[in-house]
Length: 123
Image (cartoon, rainbow, N blue to C red; front, side, top):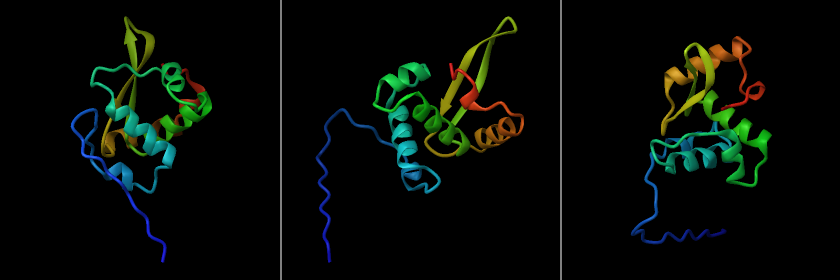
């Protein structure tokens, strides 16, 4: 029998507390789980930009897009278009610790309407 030892250090600062749902969600890849945990550690007022996000890790643009798309599909991210005086000015992202049913429904609707993440700039 093989033993695994997991070492956990006592935390006194610089840590994130999150719901375990995403860590146990078998619909998420390891990449999706890691990306979600990274996003959840950011301040509430953080603005998500694909270019900035891809520069914070070793994954390229396509991998980052697929991770965002995976999280949107599974309800962990909700993306809405931002407009100023009727003009499209980018996207606003809401990131959730547990899947959001509205985000899942909106993603499914956008998939059927051919408004796919990979075909957009992601803001």
